[in-house]
Image 1: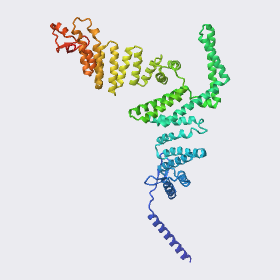
Image 2: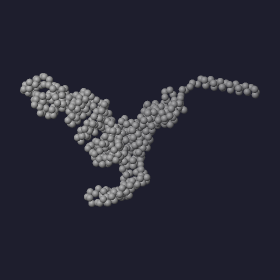
Image 3: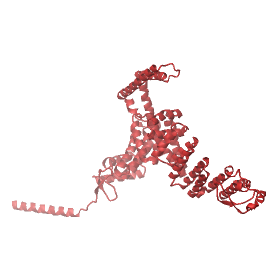
Image 4: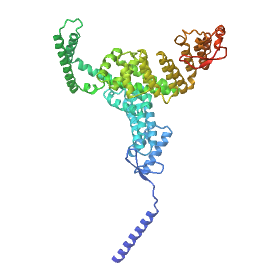
Length: 551
């Protein structure tokens, strides 16, 4: 029996081993692999189509089929939600379709709940909103293009959170989020994201002002400010009733009070949470924010206008209007502010490009370009960021000051910087030619007008008309004292030639009225004059023209 049992046991072991080998050899490879998600995490059970089913392949496939079928049928039942939750919890990396469908699902649920209005479950609405935001984050996490989906998330974030109880508390967090998008996307920032950004900037400054009110209302602060005000009246000494010793005394008191306010500010920031949290969102910060928003809005308006996209122009004009109203509206900026506060800051550091830009930008908006620091600030900006627009701007200011030499210098810089735009070079050359004429440099003015035509022939009518005007205006300079009634009319004959090239019939007629008369030509025939003959013009004009008679 023992030998028989041993034999049977050995037989069974061999049979089982053979069967296992046979089954193993017959079992096909399921072809599933592991892959890396965009964030570097591991996705399991991935097939050739890009679906990653995780470890429970069959169950996940079943859940996904049920979920996707229901979504295609727009069946947003609890069973559909449960199927999504299973997939989202166990295989968040299954496929990008999970996020496409998931966003569709939760936006539909959110819409349905919101339509209930007063009967709506606010907690449920917040839950759905947070899920939408989270899905945008995680789509980027698992499937890439995180920046794109963050920008898309921004379109919903402000709308969802602006009425929540913790919104004001979290303002710095939301500011960081939207500023990050605007810094990254730049001129491509979506207008809805920029709209949210403007609103958050404005609210942050309001929080700053509230925090500062607490500091300003502190009795110790008020006492020191009173000392400063009193000292200022003595130092100014408008009526001349204070002695030098008194002025010196109050100057010291003012300095001590300012130092004490600085100490109080430090102490207040340490002890007051709001002051500490919002202190950096002050007027200087707000001015920077206004410039930042206006720069992006302005560039988008230019792009939209060039592309003739009326809706985009309207959208970005709305953003600029918001910035003007809600940001600039909180800044009491006028010519005195620019010339005194910003001017003093710029005077202390003439290399401060940020302050220089503010002086230029605000001066233009507030029509304070005659201020004492405008040109200097504009030149500082130009040195850092040379553009033809700035060169033209500076030239224009020198024209207003009747400093033609400096105006010419800056027009020349503008022409050089317009090297990629021949049309602008031509237009600016005409401006420069006019400046040469203003200085009485008619020959240089003519040469510059010819250069304008070389840059762009489309400006030839204006250029030739300008040259004709130069000739017409040269009578007193060149021929007024001449005793030759024919020769002295040469400037008008030459002007007619220029007007003819310009196709300017009205000015041709004006020049004709100044041609020599038939009697003048007849009287001076001994000099070789004759209608239709060539005649030298002379003076700075030079060259020759055809002798014609007054009509």
